[in-house]
Image 1 (tube, rainbow, N blue to C red):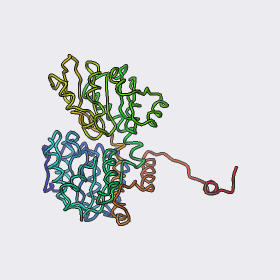
Image 2 (cartoon, rainbow, N blue to C red):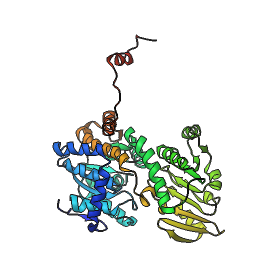
Image 3 (tube, rainbow, N blue to C red):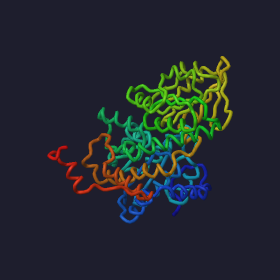
Length: 422
């Protein structure tokens, strides 16, 4: 296809390498491929304009191709300054004619300029990962609102922000929370985040996890997956929480649970996965060991209070790619990975394609559902319809060659009956 009319990527000459990487990812995305084949025939998105603010990765490129195959005009920007894979961005521009505005390492000004560029498509549907795009539409670019019928949201942090907007009555169009689909958070958040976060930590530090004390802040689905993978590599895992229910679950899962004040004294590696503000802060830095490593796998770089750490430091230097050493006045060093941004995407490649297959299948089918049903949806956050969730699970099992049983007529009657008793 011809090169997109509008784009801002690092170097379109990376397109050949990007195409190879996208094709490699698609080999492990059978569900999205099957949806793409149907979309290419049926064109359910014909004439629809989509502005997407997502991590620009090879898997995201596969999703953009499916949306375009369905007839949509797509404009894509990055949802995090460090998560872009420049080869994938270049491939979408040169090989697929899709507008892309994303450069790995872009500054804050460029990041928001790219969001505005993606919005210039005049979207009918928004596709977000963190709700920055929706926020800009509602605060700075309300002129786009009349044309927008709905949107989707990919991650926990964005769902929290959008749910708050819905509760306050300021959300101007319905959003489908892709993150809440079981085929998303059970797999992407748990298995994807668990593996890719460990991958990012190891690529940036080359540290041995076996025998280390690994502190996981937050025991949601991401925290569960990360704790499981760290323990599997031989680390002593301590979980910190503010909610008694997941804290109790962590205890029952066999993990140590402590306050961050306690964990700060003994941890070797700290990773935040809460979606909240200043989970690691001044009083914790003051207690950490010399050489402690801190990182984040939540969406925004606010979970670690880096400004507070900078004030405590007498010097800061980059000692390895994606590793900054904060030398404190008492002689201790604390190492921050990936500027406190998503370490699995800053220093590694993000979630494996196998789990993103289900996440992005939810995205594609949720857009299709939104276009056909937005008139009956309130301006709040909605869950992915259960039939979509189950269909994705069915397709994934079929692709894996796994068979499951079906209820017999007798069993269906029993489950719907109250007369049969024991």
